[in-house]
Length: 315
Image 1 (spheres, rainbow, N blue to C red):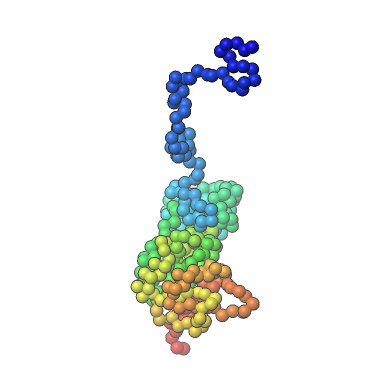
Image 2 (cartoon, rainbow, N blue to C red):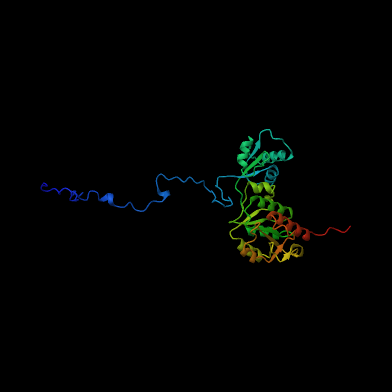
């Protein structure tokens, strides 16, 4: 027989427990919304300032991170042009050819600090421009021109010529196009902020320093930039494999021209193509699907330069 006040064995009932009297009320309350990471006392942003998103051109850099110019020709051209330089780095016991001697002379003339370093240190400084030839120039970050400024500079010449790039993301292609633009008297290259290579050590290297003669302008929107160029009197020539006009038949020698080059494979975007005054194709063997962007640009720039050249005096 069960004792009074206790449940009978096997009844399944539990002994009642005393309440807390409200003493555990706070423990039952919610803690509110989860705070943002940056609001937590232990948070530290470990992402480098100015780091680019995956797949971006890498144009944005930390404000205190200098640009690097690598290679003998590139460094000499930059120093000749008076690029704001911070320091000149030379490999130990480098052979002093004419370009090295000129670089040293220009650095001394402009009070640019000279540092002799090991080749591994030069490799680290040069980054993607791996063929530094034993010389690296550290400069203030590249200052992009405004599209309107390069347009005005072009219009002040005898042969107004610009190049605009649509979706060209390889910095070596950009550097090669800059070099061709300078070689054929172009006044500058316009690139959009998105989906485009920016000025990097590889660009300086591939352009052989010619970026100082054919500056790069940054456009917030390439379509708007082309429309602005049209309002200034430029004729927009788009390069396209499907272009209805073959390059030899394109008569644009007597007007200011901006040549628009698209990426190899993808070509020009739809909106950019719609804003071209003419679509030109480069005749080539049918077995070849397309040309590298920089090669196509070089061919067209040469052709336009050849047509606009003034004939020499008769002999």
